[in-house]
Amino acid sequence: MRAGEPLVLVLGTADWDAAVATNQHRAVAAFARRWPVVFAEGTGTRRLRPGDARRVLRRLLPAALRDTPSRAPRPVPAGAGVLSPRLVPHHGPGTRALNARLLHAQVRRWAEHPGPRVLWTYTPFTYGLPALADATAYHLVDLLHENPGVHRGRLLSAERRLAASAGLAVATSDAVAGHLRRQGFARPVLLPNVADVDLFAGAAARRTAPREPVAVFAGTLAAHKVDLELLTGLARRLRGTARVRLLGPVAPGTTGHPAWRELLAEGAQVAGPLGPQDLARELAAATVGLVPYRLTPLTEGISPLKTYEYLAAGLPVVSTPLPAVRALPGAVWTERGAEPFTGRVLDLLAAPAAERAERVLRCGRAAAGHDWASRGEQLRGLLDGLLTR
Image 1 (cartoon, helix red, strand yellow):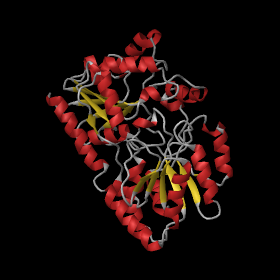
Image 2: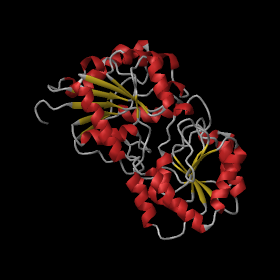
Image 3: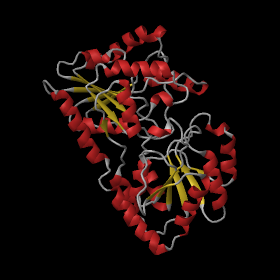
Image 4: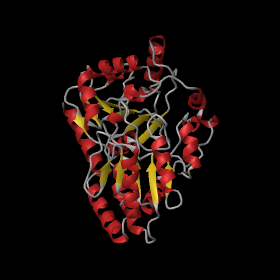
């Protein structure tokens, strides 16, 4: 580390080896291209559920005693390190002082860094770390207070406290930006989610076989976000002519939802979480990309990065009418209601081969520029400006 060089501490909301890569994983890679980075894995934003016991226990065990993930671990970029904070998994008045002491001790390398200290956080539960930082940024990618199981009041209160010390706020959608302004953050920067365009476009370019009659969803399968009933109706209509494929981890509680069992009974296929290369190949083989989210206060703020993954892979996109998903002629459709949604998917699957080939090119052009390479430059520029201020 060079003398006087900034050290960036990224407080995440997920584990580094989480099945789905998010903004925080990409930001670490972007910052590490220029500065040393420490990524602190998520300490939780919601109340504990029965299924969380294994994850909490794994965090508390020494590294040598932890179980091995069932998939290959996510590579850590050169210049970055990963920290698994051992805290009490509860954000309340009774644990605040203890967790502050524990967290400060575990980030001592950053706290005692002689050069500029940057805190880039995805969680509002920062336990006094902004007071040790020369610059603080809050990067909000979802309306966290709308997630099931969170203590809404404590999370909103933590955001208001953070607004008093953060020099920068970044939002992934207009709804998130509006929320940040109401919480006291001045002039949030709007950076909608993007994708690894080259990865998905490359997989599409290399495919020589015809695309399969598949409508695909890529992402976490959570019953409170994904409209399982909508997918069930779609799978029923496609049965015998096309397939619904679901690519991603299944969130706790989803398999117990009645619509989940119906969805599988109608022939929907679940592939589970895939690595980036495998996901790119799956999308390159499909015909239509789905964004079947429920319309709720939580999804009002979602900016689905899968939109640009689909487009880069040459897939037309059919979405429910989320505020952050804008219709794009010939490439992106937003449909309200099960019948229009299903009908649009059927039309796209039944289109003549020449029309589908033209649409692949149009979708690829729509994804151009919405990539992580460009976004990485923007993030480094924002951090540079934050340090200058």
